[in-house]
Length: 295
Image (cartoon, rainbow, N blue to C red; front, side, top):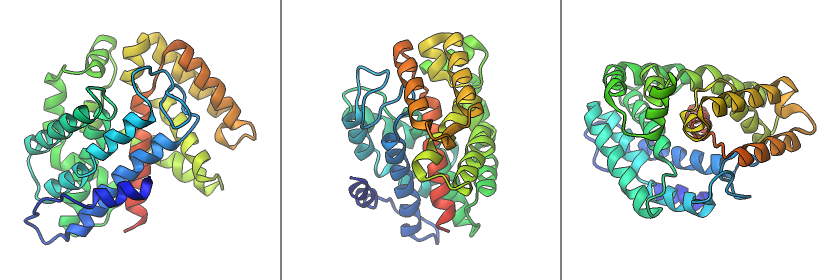
């Protein structure tokens, strides 16, 4: 299934009026699609959908996510091409709106990847902007490219936009929303998730355990507005405390890490908590790791 998604993502790239080779942009887009698949495939993930179960969700399952991925398969390369052309933010936003429409058509109106359309889309645009300038892809350069290219427009957007459950939860509870995270260059991604992933792999953890460690590190640090929307501020703080406890007890390096994570998963399902924002950051971390390792 992963290879089918990779091949499908190679088609549909628009004309790019830059010297950047289309294959390079396709590689960036492919990595985003595969990173979302990798996030879906990880289990156990507290409250989240995987191939094992639907977590805290009754309206979606892994099949819903796969349909969504196929609907989005061209989007990430397309927005990387927009970044390569140094498109203004309004063009990136329009591409995201159209991608979200295709996602909702594929899922019968269920929001599976709205957060990833926004965050991973921006990161792909930042990568395209870098590559068109002949600069290497690295965590620091990706972050700088995003902020320099669209930071002010993102900050303006997040002061006026209240059109999602997450944005309303951020406003109601005084939390940092994904718009603020984006305007600041995704600090939790680059200052928490990437160091956690690199350290876990350096310590010899396999890919599954390294991603699990990364997810819990993000859950402990992120103002996840998905959690606040479903469980209020108390639900968010409970999830952060559970994640911090998992890390303090040895995290994914413990021999019983999977069992510990599974217990937290059951707790989240009982409370109907789902850290969708943390899942988006994990997917983004998988993408950064892929594109930076392959340049």
